[in-house]
Length: 375
Image 1 (cartoon, rainbow, N blue to C red):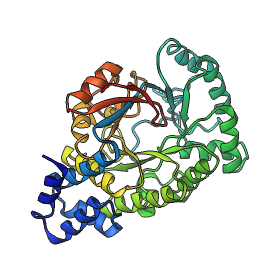
Image 2: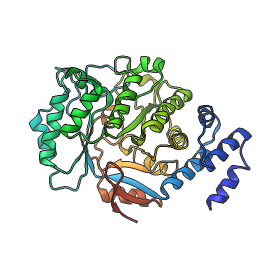
Image 3: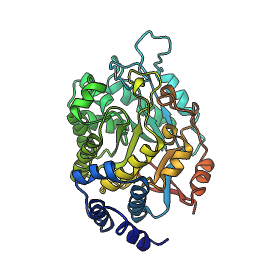
Image 4: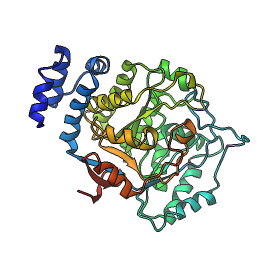
């Protein structure tokens, strides 16, 4: 069915308020905060998916991106006690870890002869490690893998390590860039509403600090990603408020590469009693994100978090990126109860996964430059 036919159906078989929103999206006009909430509350899944797919194909056609990456998680020791976190441990806990620099270099050496393009480094906020410790880590990794793109440290980690080094946020980010930091991930955003944030992660860096760190990173030439943690005690209005703050910052800096909705998983944390939202809610969230965030080029479904099959389905609900090979190097979601306890896919498996749903696999680097086109 052609886009013209799809658009015709959208504009004849829906309620007036949704029809007005659909017209705006079809005409490539920005929707408002209020309209975003209406989409969540009144948009049926098929309608949202169709509208999100129009946006997705306008931007990328059938192209679907992945990369060859691995993770390093230097420690799960953390000064904070976020209620949703299944990962945090304290010094002396039986299942705590804090890798030495030598152990981290050994991890990097395993990829010396492989065609990986990115290392993703995040972990707990360790009380004894500052900016210079992590800067030295980056330098040592790049001695082993000189062409690797280092995407590292959430804003929450950066806030602590820069303050511990007694530097300003701007000077600290500039120094990390000199050490070899190439971009920063989107973690630590969680949910921006201060009242909800107070209930789920009161101790960690504020919304204002998260936004300021990413804004400053963009200003000094460090691109970043953005995330949301959804499916806990937040409302639809909270999700839209969160995305609106990101959309405003992207209007100002154009420094975000991609937006990654992260699903709350219930195992082994203090919010387990809430349960988890359904796959239908996951798909709705991807679709509304694609429709609302008109100035974000990419929406990513992180397959280790939602599973391979849901990631495939999400490619028809606005998603154009499913992350990378991972190679079983992350424990953040396996400790929170996901089914796949050893997340890894080869590049060929990712290509097959994408082709199975009639999309075109594109291997990218971190900044979405094309490495291999599998069309």
